[in-house]
Length: 186
Image (cartoon, rainbow, N blue to C red):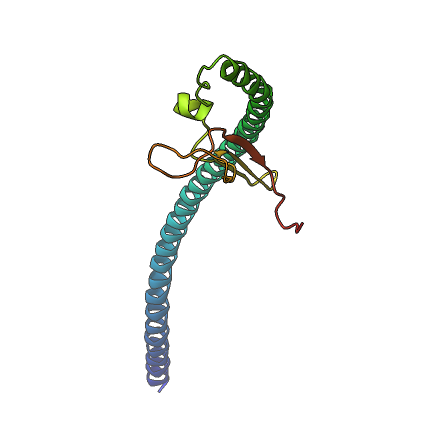
């Protein structure tokens, strides 16, 4: 009987060993799966970090590109302002020169007519470059002004001689400089 009890005890131990071994194999299989998942996740994390580094490098390249574009815009704005200032100075200088030229030409024409000579041609008739036609139109987004410089005919009176094609015309052309402010009513 002692032998039987010892055998039963051994059988119980074997049963427990078997159960614990099966439990151990299940845990071992789960551990293996967890390790594989861990390695896979580590690889993914490494890839994510590499992609993040590439994106940050690309972002910095775009930031630098935007900085350069803004610098170019600032240079261009300054160039436009300077060009507008130069143009305004030239328009003012042209207007002053025309104001000097006009009375001198009228005086010379009057002297020529007293001698029976024809009047000298007007600037607009002599050279296209001196006529400022068509209108020179500058819109300045910095100063908010519209500048127009044009050569225009004054209104024709009844004493105005007829041109070769039969319409009334005035020989004298007038240089007008108009600078209306935006948004103001007169």
